[in-house]
Structures are given as structure tokens and as C-alpha cells.
Image (cartoon, rainbow, N blue to C red):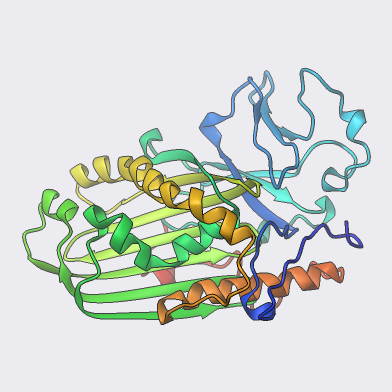
Length: 344
């Protein structure tokens, strides 16, 4: 505990601009802790940054998120926890089919900081096959950087997204003090096998991929648009359970796609996640404890480098006791324009 903030900042020898987020903890943010339908009267454990958290419903159906297991411990034993103001109970919200947990100081909880998900109804209600939960063998930072590097799909998820061969491939990075957005535009790339299976006859397509990340929480959107073809909106709530394991809460809702695509694509989440995890296991030890040599990268790594830089800046501010959000943060702002859609 440093001042009133728990962080572990780890800067590399190259300076703060390329430091590793490692297992740093950023406070005062809404964490996407679980799908609502998974929470029952039987308590489940959902650690956050190695802190205990149990989710359960009482006899009336109301949801509780506590630092103690309701069947084996009393709330009084957690009277010194600043995360729950001495009550043992976390502050929560229900939205978009998820339970959101305020990770930070309860008196600072702000519903206006809840992320927008324009492709999921606020009240939820999507079919359960569109939801999935996976465990990755890595820290939150590595999982988020993997998603920000859209080029990884060219090699790991070729069947769904296609390979890297195309007429042009442009990447741009946008950011605020609290978010990073990577936008990739590919022109005239070979139609992926999965799209051909779904009925796309053209030999070549255009693809735009957008990844939008909220730094404090690990919340991420992956929004793909194939032309001709369909949209692939993927919501990913990363929850770092510890530095070696991240829980990946996912909802995929290709709402304006044909029925066949809408029924099949969300079910690919488990396969895609398993492909990512094959790489995470060997990478994570090196990510947490990088070698002294400098990290070599290409222009396609711009979003990941920006993520590290901004994450480090927030951590340094929080070390000094500043948990505020900048005027440009836009953490809870509408994303409909970014994704070129009308909110559901």
C-alpha cells in the first residue's frame, strides 16, 4: 500500500514510455467480474488482483459480491478492508448482462464511468450461447496487448479472419489519458474460409478491425467489419485474478448478420481463446520479467506501446495519491460513432 493506493509500478531501463504493466493494480474502475447468469445461490470465487471476491444470490435473487464466503466467514473479519469501506461488501452494478464490480474506494464509485457497449442491450437478455468465460495463463497486460495487436489474428485465427496478404494494410492509433484505440484497415484481402462457408462468394474483401481498451479495468471491445460480409462485435472483460491468470468474460453479438452466422460465430470463442492461450503460457514469464535487451517492434505495435506508456502514467499518478480521471478520459462515453452503428 503506497499512500492510499495499492500499485506496483515496474519501469524498464528504457524509461517509462516502454515499461511493462506487469501486475500493477489501478484503482477506481468498473471491472466486468462475471456474466449474470453464472451467479446463483451457490457462491463462486472470482478473485480480482489476488483479492478475494465471492459472488452469490440470496433467497430473493439479489446479488452480493463479498470479500468473505457467506457460509464460512463473517463480514466483521474484513472490517479493515478499504476496498469495501470495512463492510466486506463490494459496490456493484448490473448492466449489459454482466455484474460490474467497483475496484477501488467505494466513496468514489461513479455510474458515469461504466463503459458503453452499444452492440449489447443495456438490460442484457442475449442468448446464453453468445456468452463465454475462459481462463488465460497470463497477466491482464499480456492479454490486452495481444488483443490490441490485431495482426496476431493473421497467424493464429486465419480461418476466421484471413491471412496478412492484402493490397494495403493501414493502422492508426487514437488515445485519451485512459483509453487506447487501434484501427486497422485492410483492402482487397483474400476472403477467409469461414466467410466463404457462411455464403460470401467474392474472392476478396475489405476488413476494418477496431480494438478499444480501457486501461484501468482491462475492458476491451473488438469490432470487426467485413465488406462484403458481416460485423463481428466482441466484448471482452479481462479480470486479472493474479499475475499468472486472467479471466476472460466474453459476449459476441453479431446482431445484424444472417441467422446462420449469428448462430455459429459466437460459438467460435472457445476455439479462438484456446489458440491465444497456447501462446500466452510461454510468453507470460518473459512478459513479467523481460530481458535487458530492448524490445524490437514494428509500426503495428504502436497501440501496445501506447498502452504501456499510458498505463505507466496512470500508475505513477496513483502512486502520488491522484485517482482522478482527466477531462479527456471518455471512459463512459458512447462508442456508437466509433463503431458506425446505432446503439441497441
